[in-house]
Image (cartoon, rainbow, N blue to C red; front, top):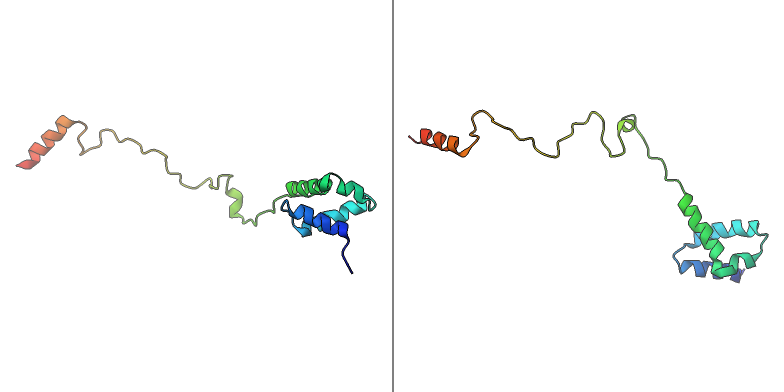
Length: 116
């Protein structure tokens, strides 16, 4: 049985813009049923209606929910858990730590004392 030339043309036209035959076939069946097999409405403007519905369905697809564990419920949108230790972005300055000189004059006294 030879395929309908209108169907072949729809497949060919939409394949040129990167739409697979499987997607075209599914939406084309719906449109033919909706338009009572009126091809003129589907073929108008170079299958614009068909392409628009395919793109609209892709946009409306909801992402599949991730498999979750009990632990995943505590993770925020950035991927951190509330109890997780956060490392600061900057190191804190340690002023006047014991055993370290705070200025150059103290440092020279320390060096002179330990030379001899």
